[in-house]
Amino acid sequence: MANPEAISLKNQKFTPYQVFLIGILTLLQFTVVFGYAVVSPLGDTMMRDLHIDTSQFGFLISGYAFGACVSGFFSASIADKFDRKKFLLFFYTGFLIGTFLCGFSTDYHLLLVARTLTGVFGGVIGSIVLSIVADIFALSQRGRVMGFIQMAFSVSQIVGIPFGIFVIEHWVWNDIFLSIGAMGVILGFVILFKMQPIKTHLSQATQNEKPLVHLWKILTNKKYFAGFALVMLVSLGSAMIMPFSPTFLINNIHIVQNDLIYLYMASGIASVFIMIYIGRLSDIFPKRTVFLVGALVTVVMTMVFTTLSPQPLWVVILINIVMLTGINGRLIPTMALNTAMPSVDDRGGYMSLCSSFQQLSNGLGAMVSGLIIVQKGEGSPLEHFDKVGIIVSIAAIICIFLIQRVAKQVGAR
Image (cartoon, rainbow, N blue to C red):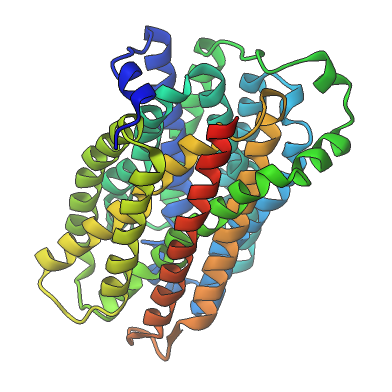
């Protein structure tokens, strides 16, 4: 059943500045997501070059997430006290510094420290972006906006992962972080000079409230618990599967590393159009209905992918596209609904806490996967990847019940 309010507003056009803002936020998300996700396709090479095992690689992924989790709690206490633009620039600058340090890292421990520092700053940026979206765009527009912003994940596959593989073959993996940093510097100047200040959320009550009191008020608000839990469990899908997918494809499915370029490019191009379309559907139909379809696709395709035997490349590409549609497609209605959960005065803090819980889930997911999955020798198949698929599927089923609760609370507000 269509959402009458959404249908009456679905043709509402964006202003030129809103279009600019969507473009800037999408590009910004691309650099941040790219900086986080690029480690996955580099995994097989990193484990060989740095002489580390799957559990250490899992901690390398988790370091970013745990750093982001800690800073998210800190930023939640002060996020609603500052101009969103200044807040964004501060954390984006820190993210770029950490990214450059990753590029100059020469051993595992130094890289682990650099990745953690990058997470401290980069992990908060997503919550700031969502706060800006909620400040500037009506709820009836947010599905489309989130469709474009989520497209950053797909574009990172189209451009980022093949670029990462190209770098592996022709240069060294450090160069990719230096490239992200250079791209981010240019984007940072555009934000500095072109983005308008965003201060509509500032109020006298918020300014006078002590940071820790404000944080505790949001953290203990029972109405927000379902939103926090939903964000955590939705994130498990990509957090547990994606870091080890390239290694699984190479060693278990016998996909040649060069062919990963075609796989990720095909998946990324398909996802661009799919994400935009899901965003539009989320503004036309109830967002929980769109989520339900994505969750069911996630359960089925996750079990298929994690138990896959050697197949032709085109079959693996098709399976990967459908699985990513389910996993990433759930994020659009989730984030669109979640931005409507808090009051205006709590918005920045709530979104920061959501980011913290999301990053905590990412860190735990990658760490647990690294402990479950076993690789007995260099180039040998990954074992117990199917157990990871079972955990992700159970989490997806629980999310179906959580999205119903979140939707009811948003409707009540």
